[in-house]
Image (tube, rainbow, N blue to C red; front, top):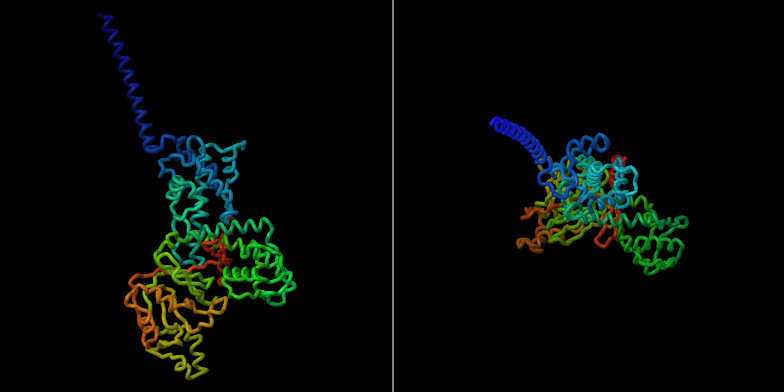
Length: 536
């Protein structure tokens, strides 16, 4: 009996010890399970390892020059439940390789200096023969920093405040690192063309940049000899310079063959017209010395111009060109485009502000058209111009059809009114608007900086007709009548029309033809300086 009692006591003791150990083990499992839920819950089953706060601390201590990316990096992993981004089944995923390829070609393809710290370590990640490779954890976070750097340089561009400091007041797009990354992981090929992130003009300029880089690398940009240039060249003229011009237009794609012919023939005539059309020059067959100087612009300078305008494209929301209807004005090209139903409905020459009165880069909404407008003479013009002319000619006000109302000067409606027969209003703090002009001869100039900041439209009447063509109240005859009146006829549009006034000195069309325009306000120089400061 005593032995039985001892045996039972011994068994009870074992049970108690085992139970205690079981409880401790369960507590340990529960704590680990809670930690796992906190950090790794809902992670895919193929995850190789996880990234946690300890890993961040260790990594950014070693790679301290990447600390500016820490906040965004931690957010990306937190939103992905600390799962790896770049490792898939123990190897780097497809997107990782594609991103690295784009990263290494940033200068050639995107016009961006590749100055990410620790680039050599990133190279080692993808170099199978590298002796000193980063650990997998280091490689994972290095690739995330590489992605953020790439997104900043290619998708985002300069910060909004710096853009405003450059006098660019068009709305700047915002990007989401997480949304872009998610879309790329689902569809890696989007890294080559993502119209939801970048303005379509960006990709057109990217293709042109590659072409011009190739021309530079293959030394095809030989200078046209100007020592013998003392006259204009016209069809049937013959000269060694003509041969060089022919080669230049062949390299640029304006003619299809380089016959080496020194005679200014029909093929070259067509090429000259194509070249002039691309550059917004007066369309004729004359090759003047200034045209040859333009052709001799160093290829490196043209590449820089393309890169600068790619940067501007990074600021533009890609949704802009998806609008049903809008007006777009490019200041350096002196051109207006009116898009309706997704198609070019009208194109017109314009002239813009002088260097002293630069037209502002901004956007608005056209909400009113005013026919037969009064011109309320700005106080600055009264003070600096009108009063002097009045002192020279006492009858000047009558001659110009100007009256004084409550101490304010205004020009009455009529064909000689400075605003012409119609104006288009879009409320803005700069008091800029579009209008007709009686000075039609000014549109014959190639460079058209004549106004005090407003946009003078050559085809203002045609624009009014196009805008109102779906409004039964405004027939063509009704518009003509309103334009010919002696009193203003204002009309509030039923649907406001977005207007974008931009500044691009390089622009590519859908056929891959590039146009370069004079930097009339020296804005390229300022932007180039800022970009170089950013990249050094």
